[in-house]
Length: 187
Image (cartoon, rainbow, N blue to C red; front, top):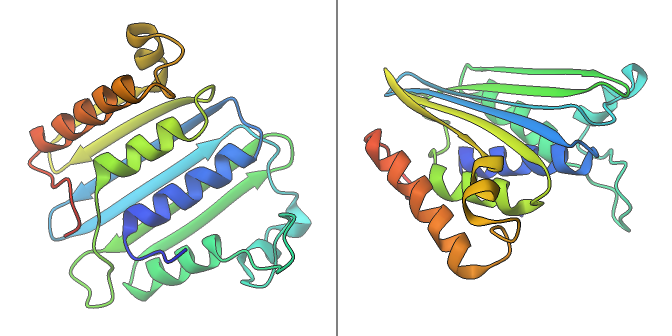
């Protein structure tokens, strides 16, 4: 999978949170037009033991069961953020969870396009429907918050697997993103 946009990185790190065995996860996205884009994903899953935290930033390390042992998500995210003059941070405690944060300087020539935020949020929320996602999104001085449990309450427990209900969720996320003046496609 090519991580061509910042939203691709967000979805990739959210997938790590889902695979951590968490029941709850948080995503904060903060954007300041033409200045910076920051996101943080936090889970309360199994975490990364301290002795492995350096290893997970090695592109040839993975704990996933694959024939080819590559775990490129975290190393690629770190490289992409630092390449823009931004920041990368990984905090984790075994059995307590993990927090990954990355900041990108949007004006830097090496900064990837942001991508489709609404579609990224939709992909994350519907990835594994029983996880409670708490999402905060801000663009300059405006923002919105979404909790995946709100969709289950309003649309029923099958809202992440029923196409008509999934379309309603995507439409709501696109409307929320558009209300900020954000874009719902690749920039």
